[in-house]
Amino acid sequence: MSLEQKIFKKGSTTYYFSSKFFPKHVRQDVFKLYSFVRVADDYVDQIPQNKKEFKILKTLWQDAADDKTFDTTHKKSDSLNVRVVKNMHEVSHKYSFDPKWVDAFLDSMQADLDKKTYASLDGSLWYIYGSAEVIGLMMAKVMGLPEISMTYAALQGRAMQWINFIRDIDEDNGLKRLYFPAEELATFGLKNLSKQTAEANPKAFRDFMNFQLGRYHQWQRQAEKGFEYIPKRLRIPLETAVDNYNWTARKIANNPAVVYDKKIKPGKSRVVATGIKRAISRS
Image (cartoon, rainbow, N blue to C red; front, side, top):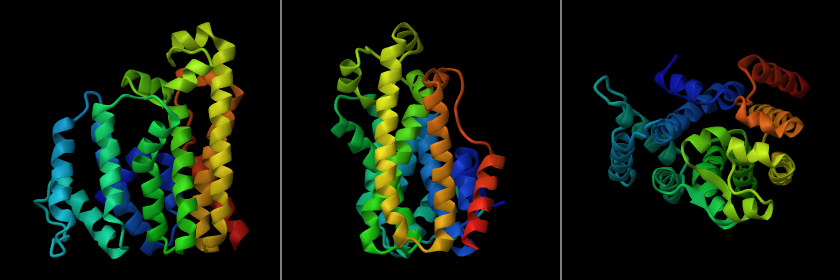
């Protein structure tokens, strides 16, 4: 297993095992893309946050981004940061990513170090654009999708990130983060999303969670309108991931307070079984 696969597998069960259903030539580039994304995300999510390594990664990328002669060949002497920057540089130029996409991603990761709350939905969506929508756009390029599909690809990233926010409420509390609009908490009469507040206001908390889950489903339905632009063979991994995100949404809808007890996410066997089922239906 390559280092890229190990990084990806460690960071995301659903995405990693869903991506295994891509054809090999696509899969390898997906691994390279996500090696960069996961390493950056890990730096800002670990406790304590690794601000030093994130700054190094960001600087390395800024130095390499516009250098068309940048050598992307892997060397034994490469540090982790150098290796994943080489990976991102390679796929970025191979598929003609908009340079602003990587910048937006790094801006959102920087915000995880500097900014902990968002007052309005506009603020939350600013963060989501950089942390998830641009990844959807990059994936669309790697998959060779037409320009008309790009809006839907961004929406797919947005929907999945929203479920991550819902699923990770307790974890984000530990990092003193609040990705949901603060004004929406106030609308539901919640001063924060701590377990104590949720237990003291069970109906308000459930109503808030149902509202956010409804927003996820709305965005997901919109994103699925773009599936028609994806070749059937390439649709299998995406549909596998979506099926499992919908499963997560259903589990949380049944008992919203479960987010304080455990991280709701499908295991390897469920993701793989879903992918096989999807592959059979496409054969």
